[in-house]
Length: 201
Image (tube, rainbow, N blue to C red; front, side, top):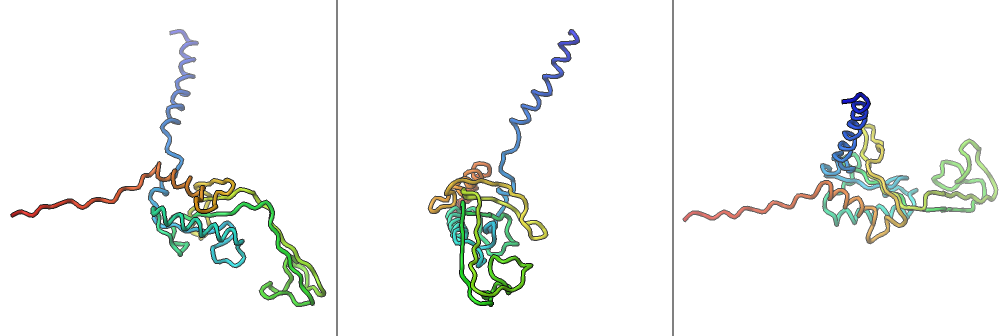
């Protein structure tokens, strides 16, 4: 065999091996999704009963929980630290704002002694003022699946999808995408049927 042909074969052979390896790669659904039992749902900005949580995010948590109960693959838990998986949601919002008017020098209760929107380094204000706060974020709904680290923090998303109105009930399309991917990679085992045993005469 001529030397240049041997070199060409050596160059082509590793490429063929790489293509073969890509064909046999594991599915893009982590194994923990097939092994998990307990699941918890929260929003990017906090848990369901956090009073500072946006109402839309609180509703998204409730809708995802309802859809999970209908799926019946995982058991919902109210104890975040016991969850094998944590679903994190956020409703899309291009812009949201809140405003209020305060009078006098007494900040509203529960604000830590200052008016909302006021820098924490400033002293107490007096007189009549208008406070406004707002949030600008992605317009698409967000759905992530994470695990909790030993320090109680969320790890990097194992699964992440976003789409317009993807958390809107009754379909909750982002959860349906997650469900389809999990069931395809790790089909649920049908309940075992009891064996019929005939008694001997």
